[in-house]
Image 1 (cartoon, rainbow, N blue to C red):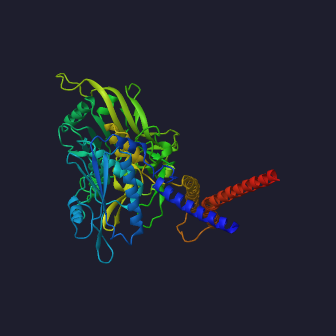
Image 2 (image 1 turned 180 degrees about the vertical axis):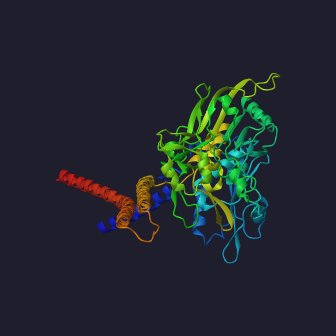
Image 3 (image 1 turned 30 degrees about the vertical axis):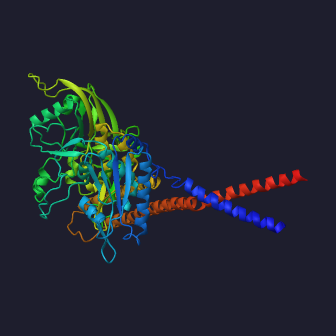
Length: 616
């Protein structure tokens, strides 16, 4: 009888366990714990706000090839992630967002629809079957937004891509952005190869987000009806265009301006003519508007930043060196309280200038990007004849000042072109963001183009594109989409390792400079000894010259030993840091689990002992 009761109890427990498993699976379906620092797998507050603001139904159709992806587990896992995110968005939209899954099988009507919408058909497998992984969004007023192909490599940007699509479909009209650029952002004919170059990635992104209208520098006026004016490298603007920009700003227009003391990305009129390239001016400013507004922008000097200098290799196979004119602004030197830069990690600039306000300026200046305190100013013309970027490291006279590289300007300003006929307001509010660099817009400083199954994918390694789109969105007044875009990054730089590298490189640089100084001193000493001899037989060395040479050779060997020792110390510090990180990653979690298990076992035994003692 006792065995019968025991067997019955086991059967009852098994049935109870099975029932609880089924109920819990149904009750907490889709539940997950997001342990990423930026909560990349949890809907952001900005996305939720956008979903709750939808006034008319929006439909998102997720096209995914089930059979074609059968042997692609990475793609299938990513598709499941896309579906989960779409379902979660639909659940938070109050019924205004409808999601539909579409499987475009070969030769089906759904495949024809995918082709009509312009979805990418990516060939996979030996048979060349087509894989579709895209989204088509529609609203009730014939609005259409298409993501031709969603790359698994850009999973960190998935929420932003979907939020951007929903945001665009929820607006009856896209904001108009006017772009006046002195750089070839739209792409241009390469005079050397005869091929048409691709538009810059940032130009493509602006065009995706807004209704973009290009403005020629030779035009006399701005087009009517633009919401934001973007000026890039505005060199040689006519007085009539400057007057119209002044009128646009004072009438309440929003301005995003990029000026530069030395635009590295300006190819000039004909890059095949070296003489013309060397003679052309590479600076740009907004005088006389800056003068009227009380904005100081010295166009003849650039900020050289030892604290944020990036490693560059000017030629293939060349050892990378720190370039103080090419800097990576880190989060520590960004305005964390501003929505434009608050969630960004790194923005790369090249030979940037700096901004300040005149003493009598009526404006308020809020820095967005700053240099480190280990920076100084160098004449911009120095870059025109620069052969060795490492040589600039020794030329930087550190001032201890943090220079403003980009800023938000606001306040009441007077017109730079007062008029007697009243066609221009005498004063008005300024709402502008000014960046003292134009090169940050060029692809090579922030993004790479990669091929994924024949499709060109943008893979950003810095937040330059996010910064520009955030600035335009903010000037338009949308902070929710900025918050979604800015969090979309999985880049986690090893700041401690980078700090170790910079310190070691500074030691290497000082040692190398000492070696060169001693070499020059020895050569001068040898020359003096030779001149003092008064003869012309340079092939025979005097005892003094031989002793001087021996001394130099010994010093050179010693200094080279010191250089190797600095490098070994750097490698040892980095390896030690890596070992500590590995120890934490490998041993910490098992140790924590073991400790928790031991504590639970100890508490269980203690309770059992207490129960046994109370029973007796």
